[in-house]
Amino acid sequence: MRVLYLTGQIALHGGIERVTIMKLNYWAETGNDVYLLTYEQGDKPFVYPISPKVHYEDLNINYNVDYTCESLYSFRCLKLVPRHFFRTFSFLKKIKPDVIVVPNFGYEFWFLPFIKGKAMLVREYHDSNCCSEFWI
Image (cartoon, rainbow, N blue to C red):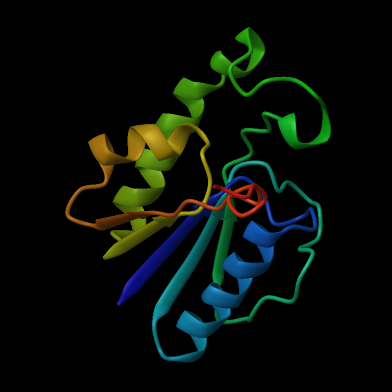
């Protein structure tokens, strides 16, 4: 099975990054063809060890919102969306994944249903606040 994980980056410490790497390594070590596609990683090292069996590519979009307080929906970021869309589309045509997993709420979370082809799309939801309130 050809599995693609699409996320912004794996350079910052966090739960999404840790769980994503654990899943990537599991799928790769169990004989699947696994890809990681990022759009903000650049030349920054991965924060957690990743299996050498995982194919990796960065789209080099660089919204850079993880390092600033700027909104992903700012005018500067919105201007980058067409590049993100077309580079993602091109990558999907190249590898033809069976499953695409998106563990965050970047732009690809919204546009992938329109360009995924025959791949099954899994959109995960991670939230550190889901258990922080006590409901009566």
